[in-house]
Length: 159
Image (cartoon, rainbow, N blue to C red):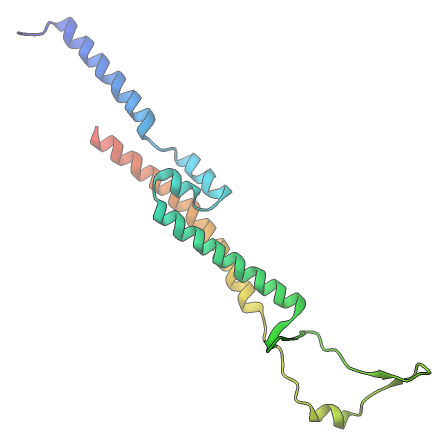
């Protein structure tokens, strides 16, 4: 049973329509993936179907935010010196006031007896937090766009 030319053309047109419909639903928008990752790192990976990558990127961003927050907090309030004490980054001199309002300063010899520990610098936490945020966010956007393009290439190859 042979098909006529008219039937062959109709089948070809129907197949082209099916392919266009399939491409419309199977292709990923690289622009949308990039925008989603710009809004919240990891959303573009979820859109592309890479849940593990999304979780890893999310953890990197959360750890970076915590490090940045701790660095800024320690710069403002001081670094914990241990056992509930905090050492302030700014030097504060202790003094006493008499009942008349006269300030009594300690002699320099008394001050030298007390060993003063230099507070640890929280700059490293701040720098690592900023670097982690910048790198993680940038990686998330680039990866979402590249993964969407690769997925689209695979869809076209399979057709």
